[in-house]
Image (cartoon, rainbow, N blue to C red; front, side):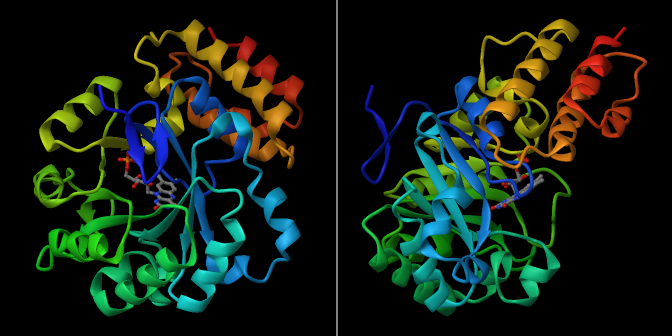
Length: 308
Ligand SMILES: Cc1cc2nc3c(=O)[nH]c(=O)nc-3n(C[C@H](O)[C@H](O)[C@H](O)COP(=O)(O)O)c2cc1C
């Protein structure tokens, strides 16, 4: 079988961890890697804020571990100059650099960033061309299929992005206006893939490993990207994982070890937040939200021991 590649970066398998703000910390990314994910994205990093940092702070800020590679560092922004600067700042540490063109947060839309870019092809062309020119690392884009139901322009956009020199495109199969409503539109992903000469990632609503394979099959895409399901169940990348109370509890305990080993912030709030998300699949009369009252790692472990 031909090796999967984005630019010159080899990727072991087609499963990709989606960028997720406030979720994709280093320990969590490494934990997804343990479960077999092929490519990892960081959370989005605001280019306008990054450029205010000193160059020597960037390595610590990104905190990318050698065992999680390949890693794609995602940038968000609209200002060309800052994006180019940010590309150069993350370049030494990133295997791939991704441009966020799908974020639906109002604050970013108001600044012309994220999904708002789908309404401004001129700005996209200028920014993406400049980013591609600024680095030898592959530049990729993550898009939605259009701004709203009347302007589903994903196919035209992807052709333009390809002409700008991007190495791959990830498509969340919804419009910006849809947010997370209704089901994803996989037909548009398929149409984009049929016309593209670069790798395409299908994204949206995958909740099992098999559904990931099905989406690859239906769309013909090269990669499948998983977000929310991986937030609750990083073991979604592991085709052999059987979900039981005992197996999920054992994984949560292992994640706690990962967090203590790899996370510089060492924040009990961040840790209990992850445990809360991963607790979803445990069948018990214990209320998941009680974990947020724990103030030490020992208390979190005692909480897990109370699962009935
Ligand atoms: C908590 C959370 C944070 C997210 N943060 C980002 C982000 O930083 N950058 C981005 O491009 N998309 C972000 N997304 C969108 C996801 O990457 C993904 O496109 C979306 O959740 C659809 O995939 P899914 O159905 O597998 O969750 C975020 C989604 C969630 C749920």
